[in-house]
Image 1 (cartoon, rainbow, N blue to C red):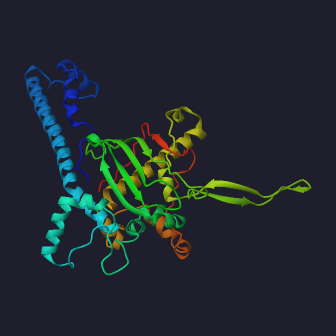
Image 2: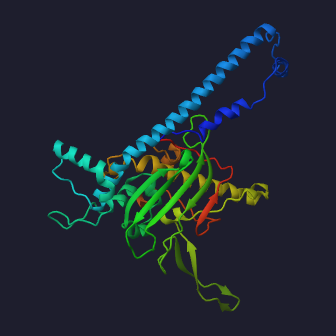
Image 3: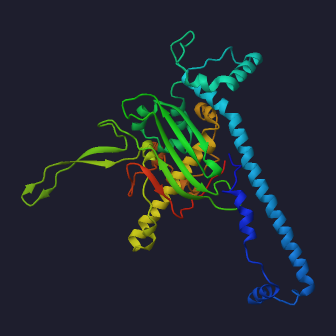
Length: 374
C-alpha cells in the first residue's frame, strides 16, 4: 500500500497558521540579499502577494484534507481485505477446503461469501481432514514464497530451511496514524524455538509521503526464544591450534554469529552519541545506519510486495528481476563467471553484525532509509 498520510495530517494546518507573517520590508530585504530587483515589491503589488499567500493556504488546507481522506480510505479497504487474508491463511493451513473445482463461478461466489462471513473463524478452527488425500493445506507455502522472491531469498540461508518449514502465516498491519507497520510471522510447534509468533515493528514518520523522506525512528522485534543448542543465528567452530614458543596451544571452540533469516529478529542499538566520536567510531555508526536501512528495506518489501502477492511468489509467476535492482549493471557483468558457476551470487544480509543485541528495540535517531514504494 502506498496511500498514506504523513504522519499526522490534521496537525499540518495549525503549524502553518503559527508561522510568523512576512512583512513587505522583510521580503524586500530577502530579495536584495539574493541580488534581485526589489522595485517590483511595492504597496500595489504587495496586495497581490498577500492574495497569493491566501491561495497557498487554501491549497494547504485541501492537501491536509486529501491526506486525511486518503488514510481513511486505506483503512477502509484494509478492513475489506481482512476476510480475504483470513481465507488465504485458512486455505494454506488446511482449515478451509474449496467447495468445488476451480472454474465453477457459483462455487467461487459461495466461497467468497463464506470468506466474508466467517473466514477469520475458520482460520482458527481445528484442522479438518483432507478430502481424498493426506496432504493438509499447502505445505511450505511461505517458505517457497520467500525463496522465490529475489530479495527475500537472499536472507534465507540453507540452515534456516528446516525451521521455516514451520512458518504457517505472515501478515502485516499498519500502525495507528500510519506511523509505520508491523509484520507477524506465525509458526507451528517446532524443535527450534518456543515462540508461536515473531513480530517486527517499524515506527516510521512520512512512510508513504510524496513530499518528505521516510524517517525510521525505532525498530522493535520479538526475541527468538531458542531451545538449547538450536540457535540458527550462531555457529560453533573449533579454531586451529597455534604454536606459542615450544608449546602448541590447544584448539579452541568458539561461538560466533552467522547470517540467518532469524537474525531479522535481532535488533541492534544505534546510539546518537556515535556521531560525535572519532573517525573509526563514525565509520562503525555509518555501518549501523546502513544495516538499519537494509533491514527497513527488507521489511517494507515484505509488507508492500510479497504479502499482497503471496500466491504469485509461491508459484514463481511474480518476476522481480526488472523491478528490484540490487547493484550496478557493470558490477554484475564483472562478477559473471566464477560466482555464477558456484551459485553463490546471492546477497547476504547479516543483521547480527556489530552492535547486535538479543532483543528489544533499536532507536533509529535521524536515520532516513530509502523507501521503495510498491
